[in-house]
Image (tube, rainbow, N blue to C red):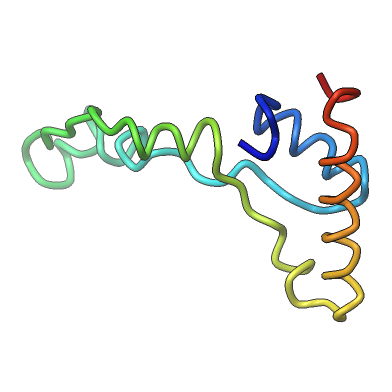
Length: 98
């Protein structure tokens, strides 16, 4: 809501442009190759019935979730100020991001 329709990917590009390290996050577990096809059959002797009807997980993985890079979170307190300043700048320039 605070981003007023700006996509996660656009938001992440804006954060990166401000020098803030971040990544989209994880993919849903059911997409992992180790849970599909020949690999899983070789490991356990059968398939696993993975139900991909997970709209909340999919939305988080593909549309909303993201991670700051670990080194950002382990740096000096000034880095937290830089993150806050970048978030403020992005929120003040949403029209330009559209």
